[in-house]
Length: 241
Image 1 (cartoon, helix red, strand yellow):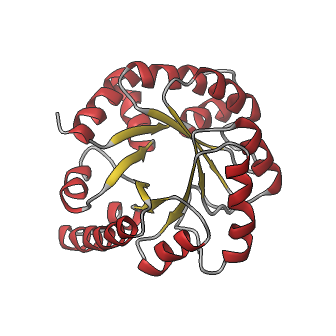
Image 2 (cartoon, rainbow, N blue to C red):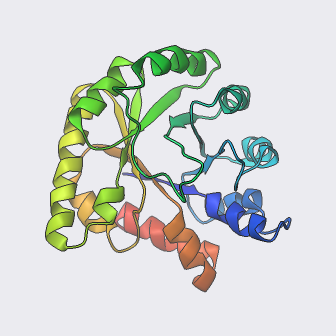
């Protein structure tokens, strides 16, 4: 059974658009868990464009399920992650000018830095460290080489494929990467652009996935039907109920 983790960054984006105190992503996280989410995801960006340090502290205190702290290799944010001790740290690429994360880490190019950083996260008491990677076997193998015990497969190309045939081809790429990761003993997560409509093909095609991170689709749906219903509907899709 695949676990569903809800990314609450866009709740914070809405709050910060008006420099308000609401909607509170911490409150939203509690509602997501009450609706059946298995955990919560957030990305503490260097520029604090959505999630803030205050949010991180309160999320660590209140989230009951799995807490996934997404971060770049920025030293300040790494220190905050180590102090927070989430259940999972997911290292992602980050550019200030991007609207959202645009692709996977280039693990091959970042091997020296990642080899030095990943042991610090384990030493801080974080049991699971994942690298957000494109479905490329070389990147998957490099993730294992630098010491990660999990990967998160970047599903953006799959989600944005213009035709069904293109999407099916991307699903096959994801499946091949998942098979390689499984053979290497890595835990497999996936995320970026997954939604109510495209998840079925992904689930049927890509094996060994333990959990998915879904945020924007749920928050966008929640604007129309409420967060509780949006999460419950996504849970039914992911779990196959």
